[in-house]
Length: 391
Ligand SMILES: [Zn+2]
Image (cartoon, rainbow, N blue to C red; front, side):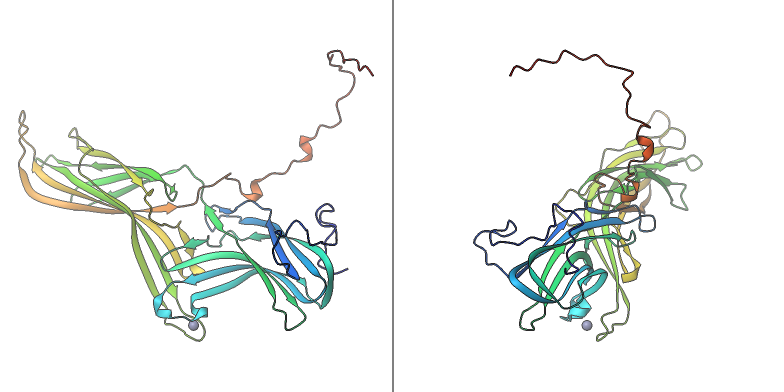
């Protein structure tokens, strides 16, 4: 029996059986190839929960089917590989495939290592692998992209028969689940002004979140002046960094490339509350929306490839100074001083969590959940009369 067959895995699924031309995996009317593959992924979407230092990874499991439709096929090898591919998008590297595509085999299953003649049948191989929690998620960013796929290859012994391959894309996500709110303080010396901001610790692509901004100490009692907010603007930038060194044939001096693109922005000219009591403050709530049709990535940190995607919220407040009007007067005169208060807040863009359970948090039932013994007969619950069956 060839080593590929694994009938013990599931007797109903994988008996060694003769495949007929009307087998369910084929479309009627399609050409029948001597060998065919099919891949069935059984695991839920591959989501690494938590940051790359905290995540316990994601479990991949599935079944690879090999259909030998010809009477017998002498085979050289059958392999299944889990591949990570980093694609560099940089026009200066030209058309060299090795400069553009960096391929890492994360896991390889040698399903058939020795020359074996496979009789016509359906063969199955269950596979599973734990993807490490520090792997960068699948990404399509401006300077580079990361993708994962499974590649099955069957190499017939006959040299004139080309190997048969099947590739299946395997998106890997990262989701940081938290409802925490980040509070930040920015100061603007030599003025006494400061800004306190609170924003969610994580945000999702194609979503809306709010940031609370508070501009404090707007009144200078000694100088009898105060600051007024004239307008403010915000923009959410996606910053992609890549340190690319090229392939062995085209070594490139390592150069840090950076690409900044704006995902969303807005100018705000009204809608804030000004409070001149005590030291004075201005409060506003900013709605940040990334719902526009601008492609964006989640945050990625892959130091092994010198690749990083991060998001920065840049806020600029234009304030002007004026003399505090005497009591009873609303007429204020400007002092002529104005400032732009510029501040940045990093925003962690992460994938939505789905079910939000990591594979290692899915607790299997333990024996504690099972009663010590089945219920006894000493407590009889009366039931309704059983209908008599008339034959
Ligand atoms: Zn090259």
